[in-house]
Length: 159
Ligand code: FES
Image 1: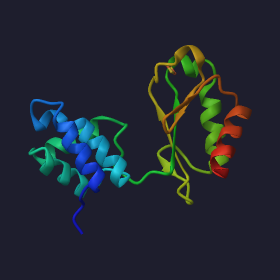
Image 2: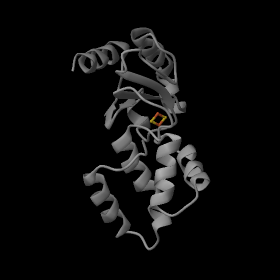
Image 3: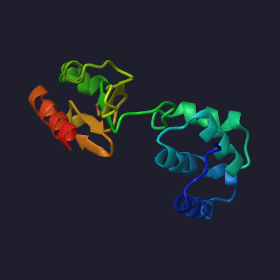
């Protein structure tokens, strides 16, 4: 079955288009909207976005592949992104990554079998003074210890 935006997303897409001089310029918010609607950007979704903004699927795929915030595969309900850049590394981000790996039983770039969590390490999230830190979905968690990290994961797992 061909992918298609929900009625609400179609209206949102039309509103997005009013903000840009050309459809092509609306590629990033349209990809974001598509990700929200479909969960991730499959080849079919990329082709759909290409059709919407009147561009080639290759152009749309090239933009989607450049940014880590666009998911190219199915993700868990919660996306755990641990910053392992220099400032966070100096205050123990490796311990945080290892603690999460052990707790969830997955490696970087993987999703738990129950579909609840996906884990990634990421570059600087601009919260260098409060490391080690991670982003889960839209929330920042800062000044992490392994205890605090486990507490956060347990709360999310129970929710
Ligand atoms: S180095 Fe981790 S937030 Fe900047």
